[in-house]
Length: 325
Image (tube, rainbow, N blue to C red; front, side, top):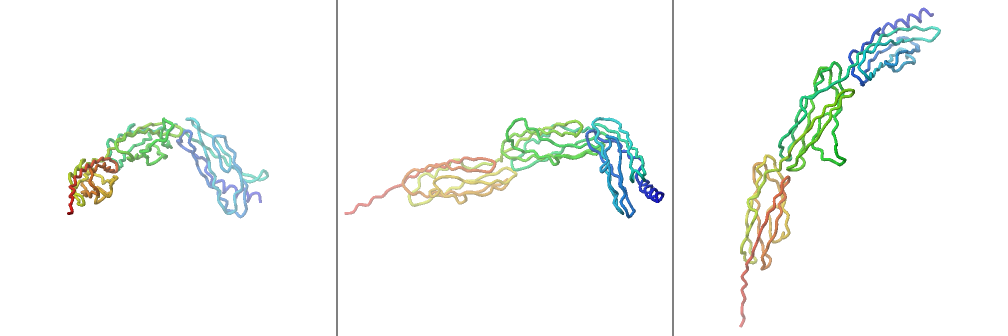
């Protein structure tokens, strides 16, 4: 019976590799190798694994289920650049009847290192309402993979306006490879200068810092008249004048008028959209209610731009008096 059990243990142990070489691994990064132990028998088999502190086995003891497989993970997390060599003993069975196999383990740990091809991303002038995306290449010239995270720096204890967004806040750059990081600039306010700093932190390695700078431009809009004079208008009559809102930018924008005498001055459209590279005609009708001089300030609010329109109105009314005899 013992010989049969020995044969069964030998078949299981033969399928376990004699050597496991992790190759080049990164310092302060956990590396994992997996072995699978298969039990083709109809009874469970106890096992245990003894190893050095450098190489960790999970699980390092237990039972192999009947007609099943057990996955064992081997972990190493070196804290410095060294050559690690060790042995592990896989034991099947109990003290009275047991079989063992020695596994040779090795690894070479190196410090990960990343570098970037530029330290400043200059977006230049970007018109409000638009976005612009630039690329940053992260290079890994080493033989080990490098994990990184992107950290946005805050130099003041205040809530900042976020206008730069990276495509990946973390990632892994394979050995002797590159990683493409995209950084998007989103405009928020017209005529606003933006500056932000980011750190690319290599786990167990170096830190790369890059800066983003950009300037958002307001829309190039204008109005045909900033002073509208209706001159003399007879009571109980109306007079109409027209102004135009111009948008010389490549982005459509929204406009809206604000004023007080909405029953005296009547706009054919109080709000709307000025298409890109176009203009909108706005008709103003004056409808006097009494014999006085009218003066009002009309505010025209244009999205991402501001225009101030004065409309001066002076009314002269002739009063006719009838005499009865």
